[in-house]
Amino acid sequence: MSEEPPVTPSWLTPDPTAWASGGGGPMDNSTSLGMFPPEDSLPPSQLPLLVNPWDIVLCSSGTLIACENALVVLVIWQNPALRAPMFLLIGSLALADLLAGLGLVLHFTCAYLLRSDSAQLLTVGLVVASFSASVFSLLAITIDRYLSLYYALTYNSERTAAFTYTMLVLLWGLSLCLGLLPVTGVNCLAEEATCSVVRPLTKNNIAVLSVSFLLLFGLMLQLYVQICKIVMRHAHQIALQHHFLAATPHYVTTRKGVSTLAIILGTFAACWMPFTVYSLIADYTYPPLYTYATLVPATYNSVINPVIYAFRNQEIQKALWLVCCGCVPATVAQRARTPSDV
Image (tube, rainbow, N blue to C red; front, side, top):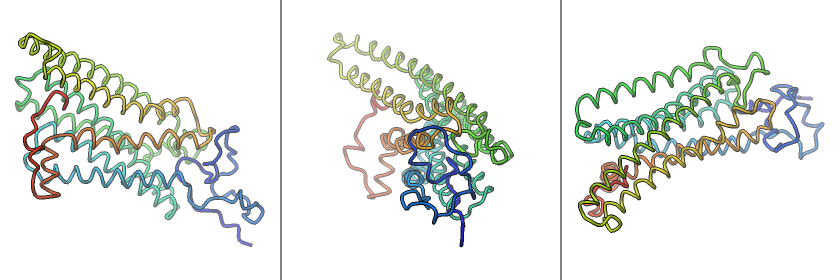
């Protein structure tokens, strides 16, 4: 009688049936890979699933992320006019999210087809490096927006371009280092007790990632507060020249700009904060359902990023229309940039 174990599960749990355990205590570590009971000894309702439905959700999210951001990367790459520091940072964000989406798809493929620890470590490293680069790129975009307002007169100088290239090198270098940690031995494959909620990352590894995220979020929050102050101060000065603050169109669009900043920061926090907090307080003994429930929304941030940072940009909109239709609608070509586009 064959007792061949089911396929290798995702990195989030060594038990493919544990996705449905919404509570009731920690997982039984005896149900690790290759130690499942014979399938003919279980009732049909308890048979191991060949494919974890949550992994299908993550793979689908990865496919959407990859397709969406590939379009942004293609448009920026092919359009020589989109070489300003702002577009380089948006391209960096899109490339990071593109690689993150590909990482999710590749991990799903490797987990259920190759059954290799080496492939698992490589794909997890790619996912960690890509999402790290995505978060760092968001910080770089925030810094760029702050500098473009604070140093408005000298923003387009060569020094700004050099600073942008330096940020890109640093953020991708640091992200690559974080992604290489699991591959170079910082993983829990040899000692299951050191695993975090995301296998094979160790508790210390994911704690460093989570604390770093909280620090970056705090820095972004501070920068956006300063951006709002600068924008409101500029709007107030312009409004005084019109002698009537409330009715000034510039004041109205500035309020929209501040609302846009709130939406950007709120979306970022709503997507990543649940997983960040959960990964700090939980470990591998917690039900995998909680990990999936917090990790899936985090991936949605890479779905939303192109909408917020790329598709709303007037220059990128023109390039997209040219690529897709060969023309630019008059409403897009004639729209003036306003403070709501910050």
